[in-house]
Amino acid sequence: MSSIQIPWQSLSESALNGIIEEFVTREGTEYGDAEVSIEIKCRQVRRQLEGGEAIITYNDDDQTCSIVPLDN
Image 1: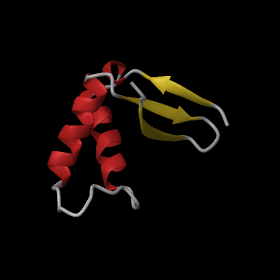
Image 2: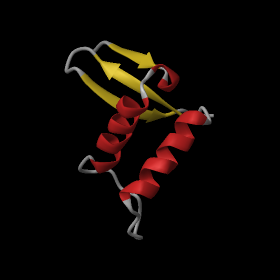
Image 3: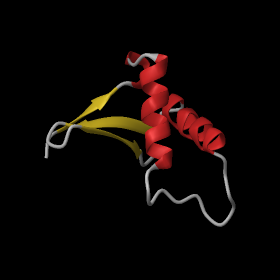
């Protein structure tokens, strides 16, 4: 499995928003018992990226992006 880190700052606003939205709408993404809007989920993930709490990775084998939390 070959994956690389993609700095969120290197992406266009449109590309970054697309990756974040695809990530938060993925089946299996769980946010607990309370219903949280897609907009709020996207803002939360963006803050994690901006704060260095998560990174974007690209897997060359299956050509997909993911957002991965960092252990601080």
